[in-house]
Amino acid sequence: MTKLRKADVVVPALLLLLSFVPVVGGVVRLHSLSANGSATPEDARFVTAPALVVIHVIAAIVYALVGAFQFSDGFRMHWPRWHRRAGALLVGCGLVVAVSGVWMTMRYAIPEGLQGPLLFWVRLLVGVGMAAALAKGLLGVLQRDLAGHRAWMMRAYALAQGAGTQAVLMLPIILLTGPVLGLTRDLLMTAAWALNLLLAEWLIRRSSALG
Image (tube, rainbow, N blue to C red; front, side, top):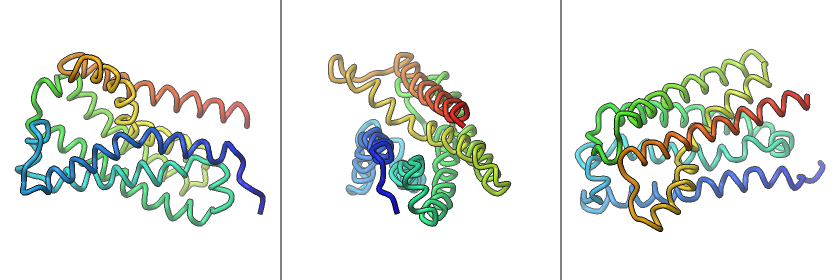
């Protein structure tokens, strides 16, 4: 068995780094909800129905962390059985993330400063798009269309990693000026998903061009 190349390790490492802030934020949110039913003002909407957000956060953490290793060529070639088993788990977790995200967007009373009309509709599109991408990716592997499978799974993961890119875009502003609210928040969060999808599409086309 040949050794892993540097690139085989760099890709998961970068994706894990991108996941760091959302994962820590998710853990803090779970702790907040478990602390005698109390929560921060931003999380207050979850207190009356915490089960869904708990499921969403746990599924999202698993999806982000385990999914980081699925896009390394070396990991796939060295441990194909692990790749398949992890993939099955990730499809389930990804669908939970997408469906619960749509449900929370529609059902939770989110303050207008944290979600305006633009972000409301973008979140719905992201959730539906992620679920559709996972379904297409699963269909691709069942039909042995491995290129299509990989492309759709990359799109799904790019959408799921929106929170990571949002942290990259928003943290500097938060540290300099304080909380980002209103239309500025909506635009930055939307831009994060758009950037992720653009990068995924570039990588997909680059992979196709290289054969």
